[in-house]
Image 1: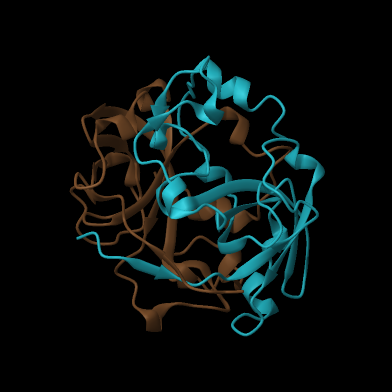
Image 2 (image 1 turned 90 degrees about the vertical axis):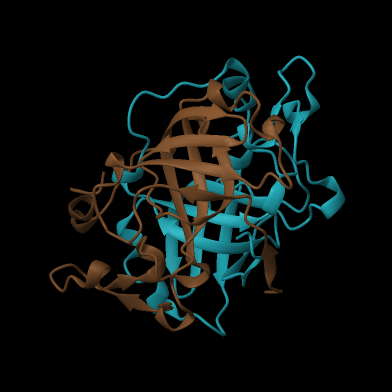
Length: 155
Length: 155
């Protein structure tokens, strides 16, 4: 039942960050340029009635031989626990999918400007969804200490 | 630059909902069974130190000719505005990617039990990420009225 699924990027990230760096993302403003061969401005109609968008993208620079399918220390930090690849958000993961909720700065034609998208220049974008309050986590949120520590300088 | 990207599902959803239905998802408990040909229990090590997971999946029953690339009324409701496909979360979308934050019920070997995953039985799962507080939306959240209304019976 695990047949391959082929996706076509809907657009591309344009920003000033050319190299993968772990932290400081909220200083980065990005433009997501939709593929105008397939999408017009109507695909983004009324997106600006939302304050935030969820952006799904591909960590396209991660090579096959870097993908971890087991467990590792997040960011190689041996003082943090060794946790499963699906218990962390690192990029060297099966299917190399990234996901980020970003404040929407504006929409103009087929271009979406967002702040703090944690993807470098040239990243293929696979989907954009509006952030709805109803899709927030239901119930109290619990996380381990390292998860708070890893985010300290992230934005 | 929009070269196709091929993904291989990491596992499959097993639950009691066999047909796509819009609402009442929190009554549904799902098991995500990892593909044991590729993953062992170590891929989920310490996942249970988080209360919630984000599940990325494919709306695998949506045919090509159903995919909308422009604008439409969410759920066909003409009393709601016609908005772009990237300004709504409906399944008939380019790349057919679904995304849901779910309370984690438990992990056993290569099986993850979650509550309220809005995916039907047999859905291919593409990624699982732990929900970190640091990945919550930064700043105040704004959404249109229809976005609150559409979620009224959702969970």
